[in-house]
Amino acid sequence: MHVTLTEHARCLYGDEYRPTPTCGLEHHEHYFVEELTFADADAILAMLRELSPHLVDGHLPVWIRNLAYRLVLLQRPDEPALMREAADSLYLHGPDWDHIAADLRHRADALEAGA
Image (cartoon, rainbow, N blue to C red; front, side):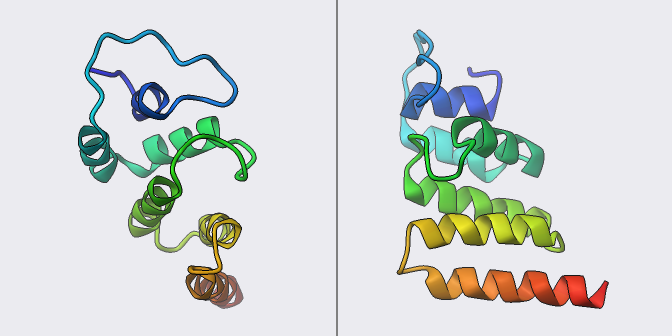
């Protein structure tokens, strides 16, 4: 078993900045997705920021990034900075999700205006 979500992702998808560790475990994407689904926001953000520190890089599949940000926002729905970070990720991989990214930015602006 992997110790962290980041370690599991690194073994499965690789890491643009560090070598993929030698690991004797079987790697099946559905096990990683199950772990991601039930991970807390801090673990998910740690994975995203370590494996994609500049948002435009990394080996995480786009659909995994999108799912990860969605899960973080479900756990932390009132954090404008996270909404904008998720929106930036969506804009990079659009235009299919540009309308969702625009909505996230609008919601972030509304939250800040109401604060």
